[in-house]
Image 1 (cartoon, rainbow, N blue to C red):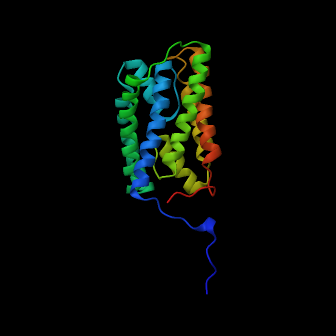
Image 2 (cartoon, rainbow, N blue to C red; image 1 turned 60 degrees about the vertical axis):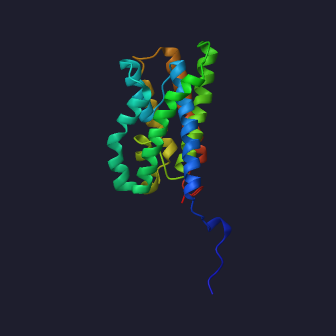
Image 3 (cartoon, rainbow, N blue to C red; image 1 turned 90 degrees about the vertical axis):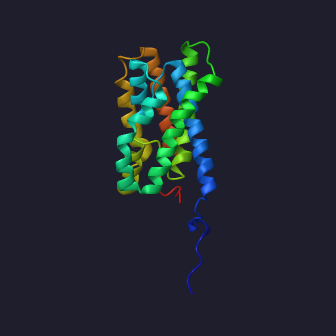
Length: 210
């Protein structure tokens, strides 16, 4: 007779409804953080950071740029992470692209001084970090560096938060030609808050999404 499975080892798969609600929640959180950053003239890391750079330089909408810049990464997601992960990620990227364009019509920031910039960076970064965690735990991401970070965490045991934190800081520092030094400092705080939330709450062996 086999030994009973401890409660900590029992995993109940997420239902389709749970996945849908989680993706909606996660993308709403992330896109709200993106909208806050956009209105405050801040940047973040990852493919969103690259989309911000192009957005500020060209005037193209963030949502369009973010959606297009992620297209090349779906091949890696399909090959390495499976079609379910790829489909969920595609839907998540599309929703963030859509929601990030809708939020500014409902939410407007005032000010833009020192306190406001750092407050937005902290709150927006934490919002995006929590949104990423929700997506990660339902086997979804927001493409680009997120796909690479999740793949390396699963295959090599490298913490997704630490890897993404290092890459994000490089992208933020590369944006000095686009934003002011004050906005750059606030953006670094936002990237730290985002990745701290991920690093503390998404560890191998701490949670398994199924």
